[in-house]
Length: 349
Image (cartoon, rainbow, N blue to C red; front, side):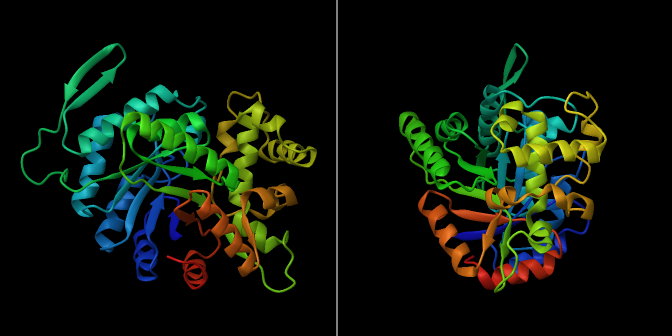
């Protein structure tokens, strides 16, 4: 299985991308969450100039953030800087929308947006929709403004069979966040293959899993502070999702639900406060603060981190690969350079 790195977008990120390339990682991704992090296209433009081989990914953008023509121009501009090295993840904007106090976009908009991006970045004329109006659009550039000759790889953020089917119909790959259950990946793969076959898509696509990882030393506490610091950002993101999605919270254990209540208390908000996003997403996907460690209960460690001895993690990765995951993308949060070096020694790239 290949291994990549994901980071929050910010100035100075390019030296980490260069280091990831030097260490042999396959890809370097940044999140697209405007109210929490920096601009991913600016960050990746700097990364493109600082690297020559590594794939550069957006994980993920959304039709709620920018129009398809603007996103296509940004992607094709990146493709001019890093020909054939750009990956674009697209989702409904679950986090990016909720940081605005809004709901994610609909799946039909996700499909239309991704199809338009795919066509425009391949220099094809395509349908562009605004409300009830539709027009045919294409790039009108003359000269070297953008690169539409080298392919941009697209992946759709999939958590269930319906979105996996969209990816299959469009001929794109899939990306998911902290989805560690092999059975879930097998179900996504089945839905993707069925939709791809029905649509006549035979192109090879890839599946990416964004996760966290911590290798335990002999006798080290599986639920200790070092583990929490390595994967707590993902555990807290799950608790935030539980605030926003009552159905998700209903599936949590009593201990996990109690952690949701403690999170709300720490943030000084409630699940019904219309302005909860002002504090709920503070430091989202950043390094876990000391006061938040208590939120990371043992079951969240088990669910949302790849934690174990080197052999145990190797077994988990092999199982995920057999279920359809092609690349594991890890976010280092404590000491990124040191963690990348350690990952490079431990994992296939």
